[in-house]
Length: 502
Image 1 (cartoon, rainbow, N blue to C red):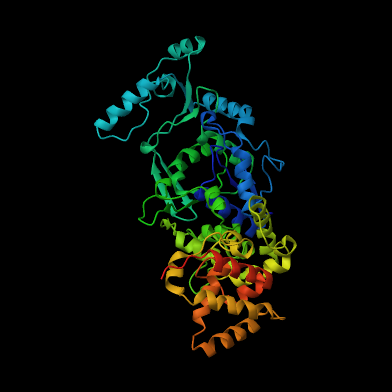
Image 2 (cartoon, rainbow, N blue to C red; image 1 turned 90 degrees about the vertical axis):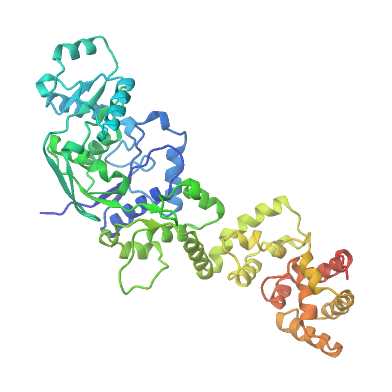
């Protein structure tokens, strides 16, 4: 017998941004499918039309593809199992809902919202778990509602929902890949709504129908859906279908171990993209929120290819995973340190050009936008930036003249002799033919030594006039990259505009 090809899915609702928990779910489905040489599919679950956000579907898929998670089948890519949007599959749900009604696994319910709320509050007061009281369960299905009254309501065209009848006195058991055996008593399972009054199915009903007909072999989703599993398994049983294997992922937690929420920080992937985090770091970080390679492995930085090779659902833990932003920041720096310069150039060049549209540079544009120049900046700043965009935003003095100078540093580093030192050293720099870091360093030390001064007496003022700040990479290499013309100009401007107060 030929084994069935592995098929997994990510099924978001188009209600807005992509939650980091959603990204993890999509990633784990993608990693598992690719590890097993299978297919990863995106299905859009838009049966709740009141929450649908325009363009959310396109943005969700775009964000996933930014992260390197490209579907084999989706609303954007097509496939043999479409449509991949649930609102385009309503005739399928209607057909199978009618089958459940005919087989007496479902019934019409005309209860109003007020009735349902009154019943819920009464059960809460009685210390009971709120669930539907089965007022509209027909007599022929063991209830008390006469068929004639149900027919009258239907003939009048009154609004209704269709509910699933949960069997009494049964146990629903399944094996979860992450959690092991899980069991539910049917007494705790509500007669869930299958079809809403607007003609749209609920998530529970539509997802089971689609998961079957799209032939998914594995359902990998968040722990919050664990309590829904018995409802889904009952539907599989009613239809005589074999359910897929399931894995429920641990919750994502804030550092205080509360459930990850927007109240304590950003939860949208798009927020992290806007802040400048790279896809490599985000994917690496999210992959390890619940999964680890196992004992003996000290690896922390993974490429997508390595994650695919090493990922397994058996190494996903049950305990909640803490969202540690410091770990994400650390990962981002690791990628910046090791990313090829040419790749970084391709990333930062558009950022620089956008800045140049807003600000004027006195430096030759053909130089500061060249690959060679940008590669020099990258090598000097790799250890100092936290995000790729900071090769421009945090390192603006490589492209633009300082507009301000560090006042605290001036108070500490300037003296009545500083301007004279800068003027004298500028003359020597101007005569330097080979404007290299090594020659600049030799020249500076030879200049200050006869004056009984340490190199620091000139190093710090030079850094301030050259960059406007009191910190940065090696001064000598900074000056070399800036070039003689720029350095001499900035020394002159600094002498003229920096106000020193003794």
